[in-house]
Image 1 (cartoon, rainbow, N blue to C red):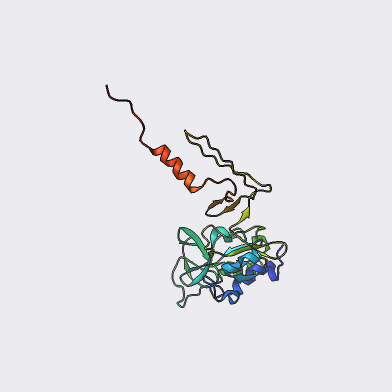
Image 2: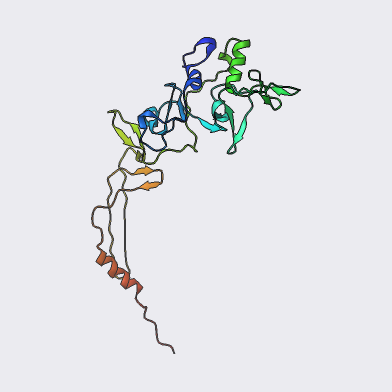
Length: 252
């Protein structure tokens, strides 16, 4: 359970306000795509995609950019906190919510809706322009944010998240890095067989495979055959025999 401070504010929410996103990660300063665009809710720190193996069992949420401000997808944020009455904006066919306040320089005039904290003009029926504005409003009036928080024990990154290529993924029990591309799919060894035959020669080859079949994102990788593989000469001879011109009966 998240530790909560004043007014029931969880630590991850406080980190969401204070952490700097889209800055280069000091732990991977020489790597490509090293911008810190993920918040680990369990460690309450911002991380880059190369840091993910160390946080693979933690709750993670992706931070995005919209008009030079940090935003979060409404679908993700709504699993953590009630986002009702906060105006959402659409980017790439997904609704997002601003994290921090965006006060306007000019004062609000006339009718219509405006933000309860920063006087930004809003559409009906919204009254908050960002998550921070709603949290500030709730704490000023109710002094307790707990009723608006939601229990979320598992939170994973979306399918559109960009993972660095050739990234080591995961840590085993001995704290040794293992590659993300090889995930054991079965507990017991599997076997695979190969057979080849021709009309003139009844040749059959059985290939035994005792290694574990491993699965990769781009497809399945099977262990290479190791015994009784037909030679190139045998294969070429068999193909010539199959492709020769068939004998036909003379025309009457």
